[in-house]
Each structure stands twice: as C-alpha cells, then as structure tokens.
Image (cartoon, rainbow, N blue to C red):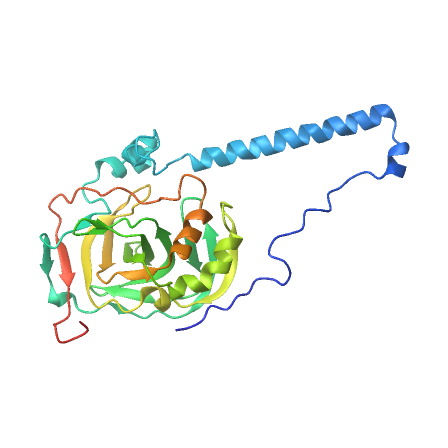
Length: 304
C-alpha cells in the first residue's frame, strides 16, 4: 500500500502560549494611575467581548443541525430548519437504509467496481460534525454505467449509517465522488471493532492535531484512496441521497458488503476529534419506499 507522507512543518505540534504579553515592573512605574486603569479596563473588555462574540458565532454554526433525536434541530426536524433542506423531511429516496437480503436482487451484470484511483495531495479537515480527508489533486475516478465520477473527499460516521440485515456496525467510511455534470456517487465501507485499520493508522497523528477544533485544516501529504477502499468484490447498489443536510437525492450509492475492522483506539480518536454532540454522527435509517436494491456478488469460485 502507498504511504502517506507527512508534510507538516517542523517543530512542536502545538504552540507554546506561556510567553503572554505583560508589563514589567520598571515600565509599570512610568504609568499613571489613570492610564493603568484605562489599560486594564481595555484588556478586560477585549477578554470578555471577543471570546463571547466568537463563542456565539461558533455556537450558531454548530447548532444548525444535530444528530440528537428529539432536539429541535435533530434529524427528524432537518427538513424544517431551512427551505433548501426540505428534502430531508419530504424526500422519497433518502439515505441511509437497511440493506436486507430479503429485499435485494442479485445483479451479476453490475460487474466489479471500475475505478482508476491514484495517490494525490490531501488535507485533513475537522468540519465539526465529521472528519474529512479532502483531496487537492487528481485522484482518479469511479465509473458507473459509463459515467466517470471524480473522487473529492472521504469522511467517517460513527456508528455506521447503513445497516445490513438490521445490524448496525461501529463505523462507516464515505468516499464522495462527483461527475462533470455535478451528479454524486458515494461508496460506503462498514467497519466493526477488531484489528487496526491501516488507512487510519497513517492519519492518527493528524487526528490528534485537529481534535475538537472546528474548521481546522492541516496538510497531510500524499494519500492513496486505494488504501481506504480495499478490494470491494461484492457490493450493494441503490439510488439514495446525501445523509447530511441538504439531503440531496439522486445519489448513486455503492455499499461494500465485506465488513472491515477498526481498533477501539482509532474509533475513539474519530469520536473525540469532532465537536461535542457529534461523537455519534449517524443519521437514522430512512424508509425504502419500494426502491430497488441490487447486489453484485462474484461467482462462488471467485473471491469468496
């Protein structure tokens, strides 16, 4: 597997804030009482107003939507928060869904996934509600029914959003693609707790760096998306939506059937990295509404 080459600048990961600005004793003797009082008042004003304004701004952004059921901005209310999010409440092709073997149709004609992924420069971003690896170079594409979808980013949800035969797993990776006509295709990979995931192993230092810092972005060098995807021989296919607002429909979903493993430590890193309230960032299951679910499964003598 291709390696990720760290490009972080030299020196300590976190700045030393011990050298705060202060007046020394000789300087203070030259200040008048009134000047000192004015200076102190200004400091108190800045200390109180600036952080308060910043906190209010961040709170406003974070509270746009949440995953807390029953909350006024919880998943059952997403469609009413903004007009452009209406599909979250009224859409008939929403994701995620339960991938039940009783509902799927075996479709050998789908064939193996066709992709041309390659390593590219990337950064890791704390979006508050999830952790994303954003690609800055050409990472190649996924081809579905003759249409090429370029890979833009990958991100994680805990626990998994999709379920298989009613079982919810510990983690789900989403690989988000977009076509030249702005159509979206997403590959979902499910994980259960077990051995460490090699792709996440390479990201662990950067997850610690951006932990609980919304909008923090750090370069991480070259990333090979093939390390994240693995070898998806069998997969489910259906038409759905984005699983976060605005819940846009028309998304081609591919959910890999083989469940991979992630360590408890890696799972905890992802949960702790996002802001409070987003440790569990999985949207509840949506109604199938008579949609077709296809399953591609190789012949028994190939790749069991």
